[in-house]
Image (cartoon, rainbow, N blue to C red; front, side, top):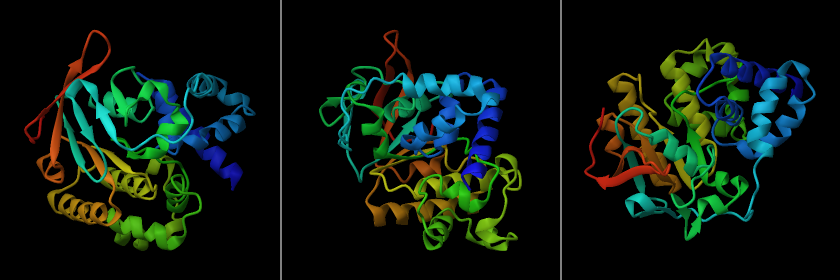
Length: 295
């Protein structure tokens, strides 16, 4: 099993780096961590170092992981403060993050989760500056479904368990139900053990997105962070997914930070943050505004 997991990780990392994204180290980390299960990435890094074929990938990921200099390692508080917008929120509040494409929405949430280096003075947890906290202190606060759900070339079960290695079948089926994927996976040969192919090739784009959503649901974090969770879904599927998401939030008491330009997901939120760009000092510029979709 360990060998299969390592092989899958190598395949995903290789694809990420070959794609030549703007942030290769971050992309590699996100693919390995999937839904912010990044506190275990250090162990995977040690395994990767034993494989000379991925020296470049290891170097890039290592710069991100080994280069951290934690200041505070105790768990951070889930209460958030965003200085630029004078915004304070805590679970179970729900925040919509909107703005034009490229304005910095994903940058902001990735800094908040320490998937990018935090900028001093931008985000605080309770009254502690995010930049003064270690990633190990911050990342357990978040369960993350990124806009592009990257899947490993394993089974449904293996991909879901990236978020919760000890999850049993009942838990896996429960999150698949909440993501609207139960019927699809039950119909697949092997069910939870159905192979997905390279980066989920045997699933449609919408199914891959929903599997990433199910994976995020497995992580018991105070904040659920969803980046365009219903993009590409038809109206009926979107309505079903959002209805189950609303029920889930009510049941778990999680807070929601939602990036979307679609009206239906935004209706789940009780306030909105409009991101307008990156200031010269590097801070993301944002303000509280009316709750509406922004293309």
